[in-house]
Length: 452
Image (tube, rainbow, N blue to C red; front, side, top):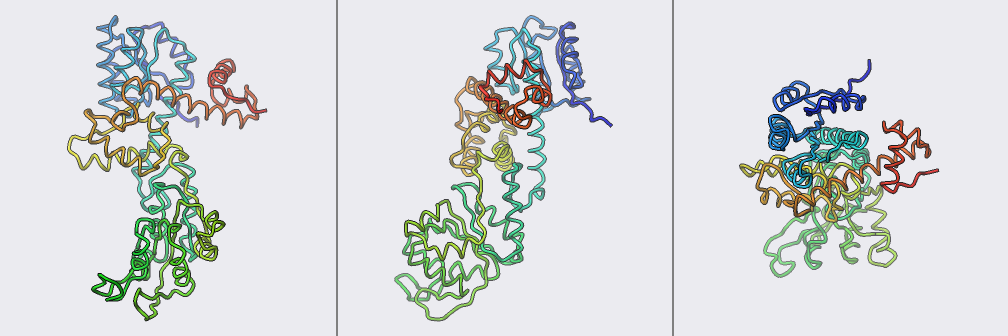
């Protein structure tokens, strides 16, 4: 059986253009509607992922009021639908308004079939990605590790590696920039390990003053120092039978590294001010954003400790390198935080999605989470904009980022197709579903270097 074609709803009252579009888009099942009533009926019955919408619809064929009303009705009934608005009426003003209302993109008439077809193809691609993101976000047990929200191949590989080492007793060192989710992965490792019924104890070694870190880790006896009014167990003891997560282990001072190494080798500790040896059975998982090998060369980190804590090293990619995850996580945080505020926005605008995809996220997942918290407070309407996230300031920015996002995505897709086709334009064009002249034009426009 052949796979059914994706449904494309064309809302257009010009019968000649209807026939042209139906003929041009052979890769889709084209459904035609000539007015708002017919469009909404077809939307309910066929549930298309993508709609092209002419703003000049009856009873206002020379204006835009009926077209904008249709756009609002479509997005109200099916908010995830990608609507591509086309109009020759006051293009810039119409584009600004259409994007503000939630349109995926805007195209100025007269229609160029190849160019509009390319926009339609990108809309289907984005719609499919978002549908998969929603599916993944809705299935908390779909990812290999508990608590991990991801759909990117890069992070799924990391999660699979963590899951594999979880069942063993090897020491694991998680490497990655601040905010990449090292503790989430450490918790996931704990839940997949034999120690899952024991406690998970986390300590950020870089957040505790050097003179207090030893007492925090190893505990102390009453009277060991000023303020030690009672005997207190340290984090290592509290992790008995479970997992001890040492975040930012590279910040531990050299003298304390010696004491930590002794514990890892002998599984015995002494509290500060104490003489009694205490046996502790706990799994050690460490993490750092530092280059420990460079620190070893500089004499600031012990090489024997490094080899004890890094029997397996796992590098966590930055958020910008996890394709699809920024938007996926933004939607996750939107659902999470919106539930705490009555009347909070329920979706991301196309401009916000484009801005999220383009942002470099130097603060990684932590930055994204903070920006979403801000956006939910700042948003006025039912959708979050790029400006709400402090990623843009106007509808003009949304238009630019949509165009840039599409070009960046197109550049990646075409480059991948050309590489797979060993530089053959004909084979790549066939794979991408476009003509050779169209592909040549796109290669020139996007500045792509064809591999030989």
